[in-house]
Length: 154
Length: 304
Image (cartoon, rainbow over all chains, first blue to last red; front, side, top):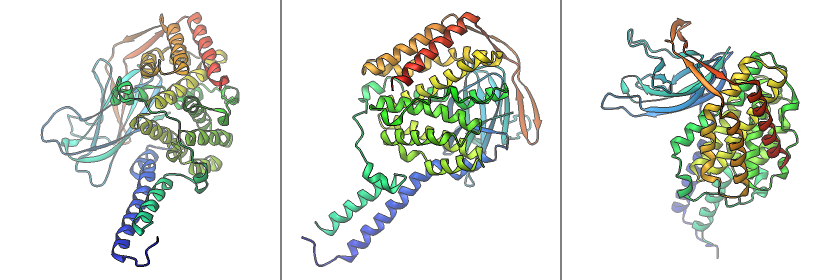
């Protein structure tokens, strides 16, 4: 039986919950078009063809060590790849990429240890097909969130 | 029914339908088949290992890009046009076909044949919805971008990202076998494209790319292996992959060492790798790979 008396205090609580869930629903759907990712993709350059992205969120690390975000990716001979790094505004550190080949040799880094310069993108002319390890971290192992976009360029 | 129960029901219904793309889907909602895999089976490969394998598979976009560098003209003959998305009865068929059509979509997009991709998009939509993953594919935006032919970057990003989201969602929800099928479908179709083109355009770069697939074939087989004894469909697929692998057995990939050379350019860094890889593959071996790929791909497409 439908009650005749409505408890407005409870009603308000449920409506607030409904509103929050609706907002959550939109956020979930919006994950596919995260503006940080789409801006990073579009800023990779007019000739760049998007291949993949890696979304990285890391807390500050207390101790020094290896880069904390690792992923594998196959890279193919006769291809020029562009690795772009973008940071969200609230990041304390800048996103840095280094890549190692299957023999654990470093083939590139967006951080120049001699000058301390961090490059926002690195073009890599690949001449050896294989599976490579992409390592990301934020400068000084600080807190940050960012995205690493991989594209192909002519 | 009290106000409390009514509002709870309303909340549940609202959340269910907020994940769907169009309002008319409410009437089309069908419970998916039982397609989750017991944890014990899926655990044979770690989540990170599966994610890595997924990243290692050659993107059809990369193959299409190589074809463009070679000045190979677009041909609709390579597409899996015979596939009817309405005639995919099982989740196995749906997931595999989703992968195959994803590769075709990548090929069409790279050649900016975006008007022609609308039929494929519609099939992809049906298949994705059939697997209850339609919410990850922003069909309306992709369709609009395809029709406008204005922003290839956004189109490529949205298409690839949708597949990545679907793949991730399936793996995180104990439906890893569907993710594996999708990845295998993408690879087989991209491999078919490469092997068909090389018959007419025997460019050394494309020849090498086909031979280099040996690098990732084991990973692909490993991805499928936890599910090979699951049913007859998977069993056949595992056998097909093994047949392809057998043709790669005697192909050799050798390496020469070298130090990378780097220069600064326009605020970025350009690094040229001097270390090289070389594929040793005879014409006969290539012909066998072309043959077995066509047989397997046709079985998968025509059996549908």
